[in-house]
Image (tube, rainbow, N blue to C red; front, side, top):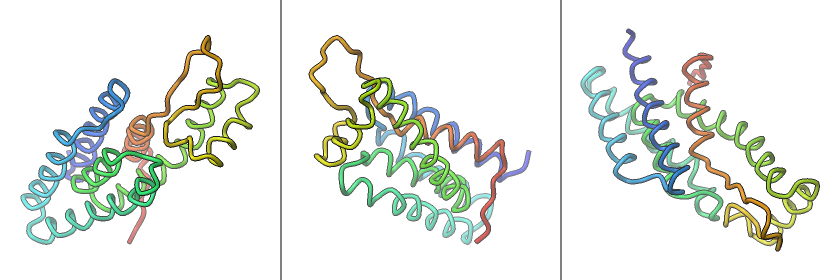
Length: 175
């Protein structure tokens, strides 16, 4: 098996574990994200030498920088930010950019679907209200209807699906 494919699969496994913890607890833990970063740096150093380590470190920073603006306004958690950094550390900058773009596209439809599940025909108005008031930071809104089951949005799911897509659909971005 090709080394780059192994690294992509490892990054996908890490994002799969993150998806499970995110959906169970609402958190992506440091015990996962930091070892992903260290593992990525170590593997890239081993397979590709010092240049591989430097590129892996740069991909870590890139992954963190891509999600930091969203975390700074409270739209996502820091676990998501560190997860993208860990994915970059393991699989590299092209992979992390594809995962970021894929998760963003999947995330739009996922968020709209969650809004629809939670609010039915009122989903559009609730979506606008959520962004106008900043309530989106709570990951769901309370419209006073206690009999409705509230569904939450978990970015870990989108990141995992984008990681899978990045492996199997073989998207590539050349820098």
